[in-house]
Each structure stands twice: as C-alpha cells, then as structure tokens.
Image 1: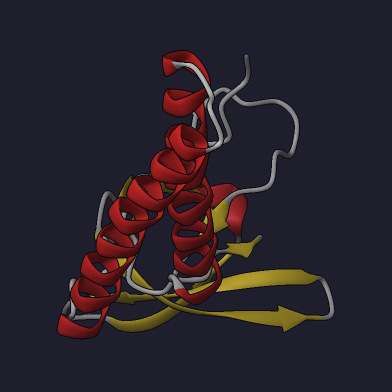
Image 2: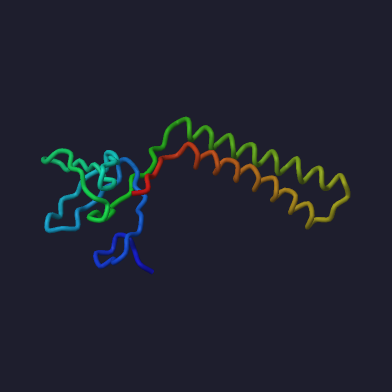
Length: 139
C-alpha cells in the first residue's frame, strides 16, 4: 500500500485535509503549521499553511505530510443530541421488544427486534454527525 504521506511516494495520491490539521513540509524545513485553507491556482491547488513566526505560506499538497488531525470540538449541543439519541434508542428498543413479545415472537426474534430498533436510531445519529461534522478537502 502506498501512503500519500510517505516521502518515497512515486504517484500522486490525494489527501483529505480539514481546517486546523497540523502539517509538516517534506523539504529541508521541518516547520509545523496549521492548515487554514485551500487555494486554486492556474497550475493546481495549494494548501494555505499558517507557520508560526512566518505567516501564511501556500504549499503544494505533494510537499506536505499530515502530522496531526484536529479533533472536532465537543459542544453542549452535540452532547445533548447524543444523549437524546441514546434515550430514543433505548425507548425504541423497549417498544420494539414489547411489541414483538405481544405478537407472540420467541426470545430470539424479540432480541433481534430490539437490536434493529437500537441500530436504526444509532445509524441515523451517526449520519447526522457526518453531515454536520468537520469538512475535509481533497487536495
């Protein structure tokens, strides 16, 4: 497997970068900087990197190595959405299991019904997180 961040990479493999990722230049200068944007130019795309003490520098993505990813900041709203999704999943599991039991299902079908209800709510929550989460740009 050829890694896009490997110095001996012979083919161009696109990277996914987000605002705030920490990158390092591959040349002789080993300065670390934060990604602040992506700029299109006539010759291609450049990543704008904020290097402390130097300022903004446009760099081609081929000369960058990802040093660290910026984690999504935990906010109160995201925590409340996660908590409400958990509550909805537990209530959905209970209602689904109760309905399956009242319909005369065995223990296995009752368990699978509850598991399906829980999985449906958790999958919807993960989809919402992906849509509203941090964006990565292909460069």
